[in-house]
Image 1 (cartoon, rainbow, N blue to C red):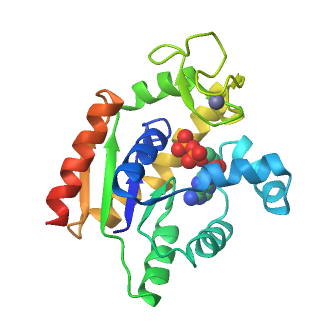
Image 2: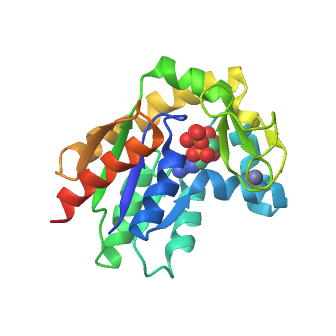
Image 3: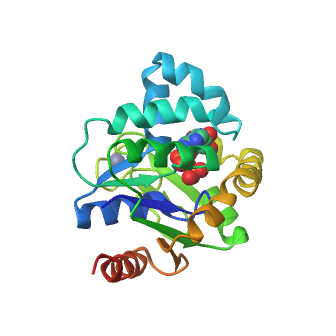
Length: 215
Ligand code: ADP
Ligand code: ZN
């Protein structure tokens, strides 16, 4: 099974992707996480993409598609994509690639959260610099301010969660990523779930939707 999670930046995709992939035994592929890792390693790819990311723009489709293809070329398990595809061109690229392997996208889950809620969440988001665990200073704070509960690492505000960059990311989402909903909606694999309940409740809803699908 190959699954795609869609939603505004800050809709909780990353959190749900980790939970759902764990429960279903899927390989979690977050293009955002891969890019951030490349940036922190200062690899050639990291250097190539860091300007786009820190200014809230999308990394060019060809770069993203090349990365994803090489990342999944040797995977034999089911995949869960988080933060990819982000444009219709990326979605077509993925479909074409799957077609060469007689595979397909089996389900698309759209996590629905209102825009004003997303803006609040992104500004309150902190992530552990060491293990990547995500916190929210208002709804899910760590036990000790700015210290990760799991690994004691320091918590950071992502560069691209600065207010001006958040605005830019939301504009880009509406322009380039929202058209994906229509791309997938027509073909019976599209499911919308509400993203405004607790993380655990959302995971259960998602699994329930996918179970119906898999029968
Ligand atoms: P969020 O979903 O919170 O915006 P991500 O971690 O998915 O965060 O992405 C962070 C940034 O990485 C994006 O704003 C974009 O610049 C870049 N990026 C990640 N995935 C893609 C993609 N599929 N296509 C283009 N750019 C991407
Ligand atoms: Zn940590």
